Length: 298
Image 1 (cartoon, rainbow, N blue to C red):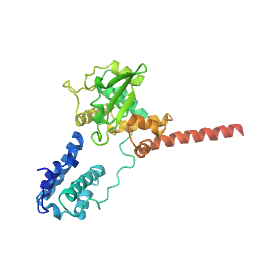
Image 2: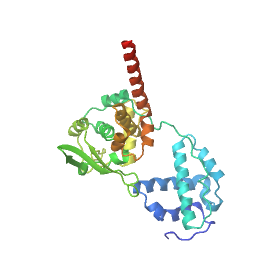
Image 3: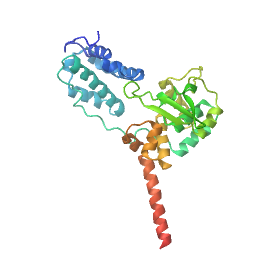
Image 4: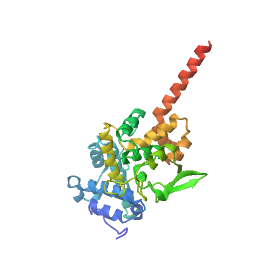
């Protein structure tokens, strides 16, 4: 069935099934495959659109679908991105002559992304979840490694190594692991070490759920949502901790390259978005200090 010839008269689900067998799809990491498959399956069952021939799909139809998701711009954009890939496959393997999703613009999302935790919010979470709890370990791992939740749930003792007498974490990030793997080596901060030493942890995964098993990425996100709510922080989430980690490094005066060595970003574009507010505060503080020194010297 791999790359079998299909006609424009077949339905959208049939095209997606053929795409799922392609090298383009199968080269994605397992989590990437799961996410994209879910997006496309939801796309196909919307208002029975899946019964229509995929050749009838036009850009105007996709814009209507996108606009119906304006309250969730990131989800809408991910849908358009997934459909683009399906029709890219159709053009390469099925002799289809157009990609209706290419002309569909992405929605403008929140320019600042997920809410970045403030120092006060971090302290409030720590007060609610003392050292020794899994919640506190999760917070510390996120803050002192700057990793995505898909990586946090996989970190375990097998990733620990020693370098110059210090403990380090050595691992490969899950995002784009098959196509563009990012290999990481991060020293374990003393603050993180204190929390780890005081908290029951698993072997192959530090973070364990209530059943004594490793979290899935989604399961961890849901549990962290519960921990935030218990701490009175409904505006906070696990996503925002990665941004908070980068912002803290920026406030300490770390360069973009230094921050990227912790977060694993390959370009400074995303780092600049993460640290925009932090850099502004640092520059403002320096500007006032310079102005104050000048006034004192006058």
